[in-house]
Image (cartoon, rainbow, N blue to C red; front, side, top):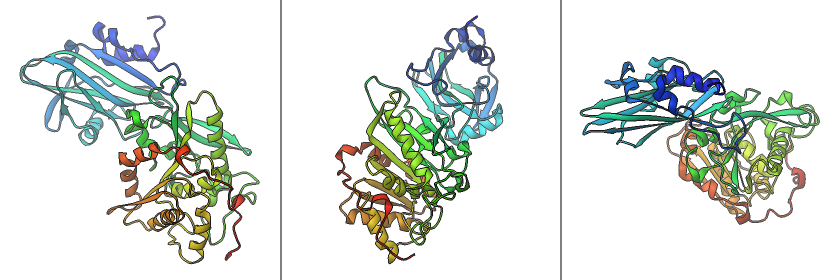
Length: 446
C-alpha cells in the first residue's frame, strides 16, 4: 500500500471497503500518450455481499440499493459511467447511476429520474450513463433485483478528469502581447500512426470575457463532442475552444487600442472583436497553426473544422477569411455574415456579401438556425450566395426553434456532425489567390 496513490486508497475505503473491492480498484490507466490530468479511466468492483449492505432508496416509485458515494476531490469531474452486473437466475436486474456536483444523494436521485433513468440489463450487459451537466464529481450505483436472482459480480468504469470541464483542459496561448485562454480535449484513445481531426468551437456573446468555465457551459459543439460523441469512434477528434476576449482587453495595434480589426460602418458595425484582421481571429489561427506543427498532437491538417453559434457563428465567416488555406469545412449556427446581428442582407449589404463570399466559397459549409430566430436571415443568405458562386453550402432551418433553442438540436443531430467529419481539405477546390487581399474591397457606402 506504500506506493498506492491517495485517491485510490480513498476509493477503496470510502466507496467499496473490504478485500473484494480492494482487489479490483484502480485497474484502469490513462494511455501513455495522454497528457497528465486529462483522461483517467478508473475501474472498481465490489462483491455481492457488499451490495447487500447498501441502503435502500426510492427511484421512480421503486426500491433500489444505493452504493456509497463515489466522491472525487474538488477540481475533478466524472462522466461516462458504465455499470455491469453479472448474475444468474430467472429474475431481472435493473440498474442506474445517480450523479451530482455535490455529495447529495437526494439531489442526485432527482437528476437520475430526469437524465439517467433506470433500465433492465441482461447478465453481463453494460448500462452506460452519460451526463450533459458539467463538473459533476459524485456518483452512486443503483441496483434493484426482482424475482429469483443471484448476483455474482458488480463492475463499474467511469471517466475521470482533473481541472477539466466537459473533458477539456484549460491552458493559454500568448499572441501579440496578450493571452488567449483556451481549452482542449484529446480523443478518447489514440491509435499509433493515426491522425485526428481538429474541431474548433466558438460560443456566443454570453461567454465573452475571461471565464473559460462559463465559456464551456454555453451552446457549443465541444460539449456534445464530450458527453454525446466521446465514445463514437467515427467522431474521435481533438476539440479546441478559444475564448473570445472583452474588446477592451485587446492589445494594440488591434482594435480598440489600434486600427486592426476595427468595426466597419454599415458592413460589420457591431461586436467586431472577431473580425478577420482583429486580435482574436489572428490569435486563434496562429494557435491552430502551432498545434499543427507540434509533434505531440497527431492532428490531420486536412481535417480542421470550424464550428460556432450566434456570435461564434459570426466568427465563422471571419475565420474563413482570416486563413483561407486552413479550413476543411465549417458547421455553424445562427451566425450572421454581414451587417448587424439581425440583418437581412439587401442592397449594399448584399452586394458586399457577394464580394466577401468569393474569398471562402471553396470551403463547404453547413449552417442552421431556428425557424423563430431573426438571425436566420444571415445564415440562409450566406449559404445561398456561396452556392450561387459554385461553392457547397446548405442551410437547415430547425422547425419551431428559437435562437438558443436551435443550438442543442443542431449539435445533437449526429448526421450533421458526421457530415462535418467526412469533409477533407484535399477534396475542396484550391483557394487560389485572394481576390481581396487583407480584406480591401471596392469602395461602398460608409
